[in-house]
Length: 282
Image (tube, rainbow, N blue to C red; front, side, top):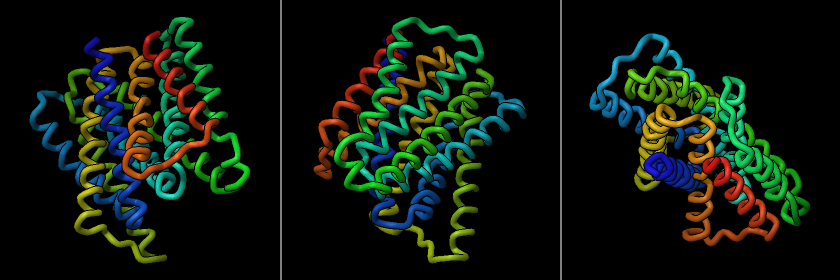
């Protein structure tokens, strides 16, 4: 029960952070929001690393840095997609891919889930098709397709980062998370520098900056809890639980922005949640 609750807290932090980051990106430049959020994450990770006891090996630091690079790429695609496309399409598709990558890795390294988990995988695959099907796809054309591909790229980056965190030593504490956040912040700074040569990249101010910092704080909290969860449970269980985050993203979009979903998308979202629930239960 404790592992399930921890996984749901991770999902809530990830989903809420994605929503806040998407809102900030819709009101300011995505690179600027990403830079501020990752800088806030790095500060939070430093505080965690100094508070939680751990002794990291060089390999742990390198794995954490690689995870951070994949994470910032995933977030860049995710924030950009959420700023331009429906959260009801982007968030669940990113979750399906983000959960599928670690589950596949779990199979490769010898984890053998039950038949219930296999049914959950099938439900998740069906959800990906349902969410992108319907009148919205025909009317929006390339916009829906573009949102889907960005969501797939986001999920791949976030999924690989989870696999890399899973390879860190149990005694390394939160130092891999700090390495990941420093790398992510550096990557965001490089992206902003490159883009600034072509167009104006402004760091968000006042309220938007606070939203970006909030997204970063939620992201580092989710990552830290995720590392703890991965070290306690099988990866094929933790990854789907963490990927329940889109439920929170869509909930916030519905509650605060009045976003409406087509019936096919609702069916796909429900199928995805059922699939993820079966995966975590199995």
